[in-house]
Image (cartoon, rainbow, N blue to C red; front, top):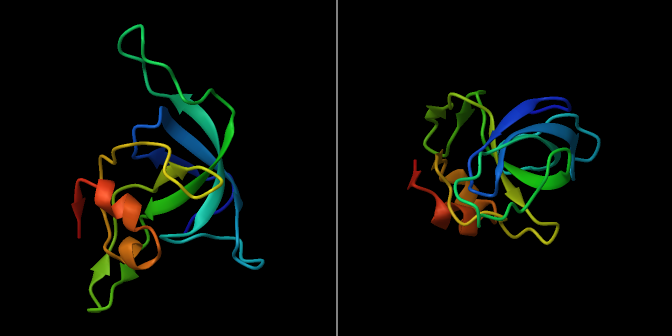
Length: 128
């Protein structure tokens, strides 16, 4: 469960490394987000640039939208098998709900594909 002020890892190659949750969106008053929910995040740290011509898509303290893709909390899939991850992680998206990165370097749950995030699932390294 992700609340406001939670620090999260970024698993895509958009340029951010660590973000902080500012607000949980579209939950109707609930104060926490689960896998597949949209949140507003503020960039805390950036990934180092390798090479001179690499242009960053973002700066520190910018606010972006993000999708929660991994949580430490155990959740049950349709087969009633509990899954949890080592860290709370997000993938950054645009306000039009398109991914900012082109690659995702993490294992994603198959639940994301059914929650209208098939594009994120296609970019992932592996789906469980």
